[in-house]
Amino acid sequence: MAKETEPLVGGKTDEEKEHFRRLKAYQPWAFFVTFGGYFMAHFSRKCYSTVKQQLQDEAGYSSFILSEMDTTFMATYAIGNIISGKLGDTFSPTTVLAIGLFGSGACLFLINVSLWFDFVGFSATLGNFFILAVYFLFGFFQSTGGPVGTAVMGNWFVDPASIKNRGLIFGLWTCHQYCGDITAALCTALVLGVGLPYWWALFIPALTNIGWGFITMQLVADPYDMGVITPEVRERQAKLEEKRAKLTEGETLDESGPAPITYAGALRIPMVAQYALAFGFFKLVNYVLFFWLPYFLGKNFDPVTANLIAALYSVGMMPGGIIVGVVSDLFGGRRAVVIGTFMCGLIVFLSIFSVYSEDLS
Image (cartoon, rainbow, N blue to C red; front, top):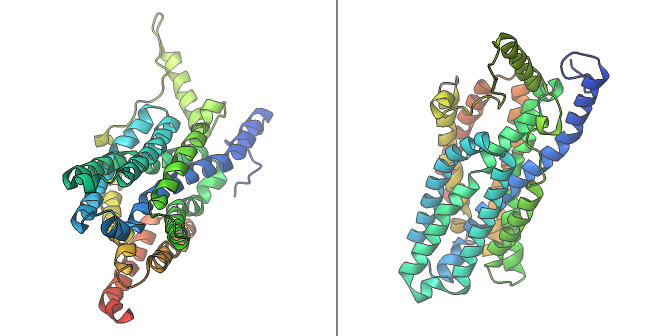
């Protein structure tokens, strides 16, 4: 078993130990900033669904437009995930993450502008078009956190201890989304509970997203940019040395690093397409509850209570992600078996809920 005091690649030199020390020292900051970035993404993404009832009753948006906002967002979010992953490989991941946060905050601010100046009251066509256009952009900005943040985490957590406990580490890290969802629900409950206008539930995450964007700009996305040599970098350097040895006189070597992977190349990686399909079905269930649970609970409960109850859904998901990660570590990283087993359990519980949910009211 590798210990945290051991060097990265089996050597015992002082230089290797220093590289390892610097790697471990920066890992908490990389975890914190990327966790916070995705937390903010979900804080801003969830806040809209917590005030759907108010958008319909007070702002004048129809339930059809509210559902179209969801559809528009998910369409651009899905496309954006593919684009953002490529952008993160091509440009600075830190810049891509920061732009996503700045853009998300700006979109929420624009929605507030439409509420402050009552665009729907002035013209229903203008109000509907404006909010759908903003949510069209919002989906693209929101898509940066997942693929790019995960890549940054993968860059830093490469030592033997981190690889051995990758399920636990990423299980804890993925709590960012649930923490963001819970914070959005609690923020809305607080805003409505103290009698503030409901648009504060959109304005607060707009400010926090922009603020976290400035913090994200301080993040170093790759250990190599700090002069920390990881096993991946050592392997890359070894290959470069081999290529240099084969050069003939007058030839030059391109040291810009490997070219970003193509979309077709990514799909050829074993299990990528299968995981994407399985994750898509999981997201179908998750986002139905994500977008509409507070709205439908609001039909039977006051807005504060509805948001507090909806927050429990996200509370329940946090230990689930951690447990799946720990179990996958115990099974030696065989995550497909673990995920399949848990998803089969999900089918059972959803079936029970669908049959007996009407009796719970």
